[in-house]
Image 1 (cartoon, rainbow, N blue to C red):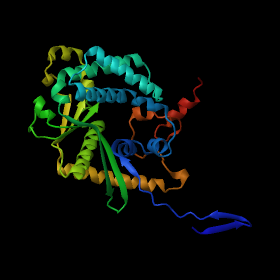
Image 2 (image 1 turned 45 degrees about the vertical axis):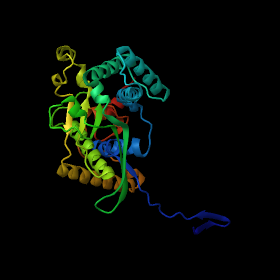
Image 3 (image 1 turned 90 degrees about the vertical axis):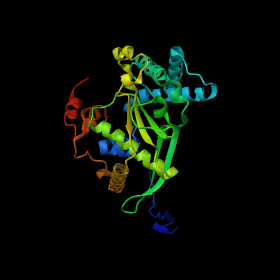
Image 4 (image 1 turned 180 degrees about the vertical axis):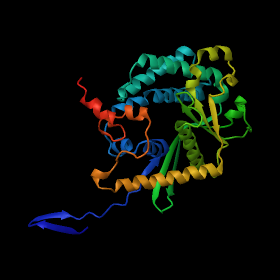
Length: 321
């Protein structure tokens, strides 16, 4: 390392530019950047603390309890009753609170989480949990963009399973030796063609490619399960344990190589855009995006009081408390 002299008896080490290889995930980086680069840059790259992180509460609560149910099932072969599910939800809630995750109307959200999880257990039960091979299955590969930039693509699949769809006799072509990846969504299925639904499919196509690179072959399918669909009380009463009464509950995403290639190409392009943003002068980084951003994203963002994409935020800032 060379030394640059600025003042007598004062030396400053010369630091060569670091070559950083960054890690990118589908949801936390690529989709977040595509949704709003300003929000992504401030909260994900610059690490500003965001009170809106409490929005993670419900989804995290659902995932934590479903993981615990699976761990218990692998040991005992038993699934919890309704009270048991609620007790597990309460334990997971307390763990989240201790970790600093807060939420509004926690009692209602706990009851809703317990209801959805218990109904899922009743509907899918042993055929689902007995086919689980691994939860929180980590996917991680070193990749290169079209310009030759190295980066790490990582993801965590909620469930790596055997032939769950075949065991449940879901209404699409299956085989008894299928391997599937499943991803829990705590809400209802978005409208067909919506940006949110396309983002979910995009996520699963990227996961399918990562799985192929890690194992040598695609999974039979990636499956999205929208647990919020089970909140429909009249439909639940009519279903009497029949999954076919919830046609929007499960959405298979077939590993079509052409669509996966498009998803990976888009991923690489977005990595390049983020990397170019990182090297801009500090004051020029993470400007408001030129494309439209949905109202909910802007409303829940702490930056909206001073953002070109949300001019009404300036008016809110001037309103006295």
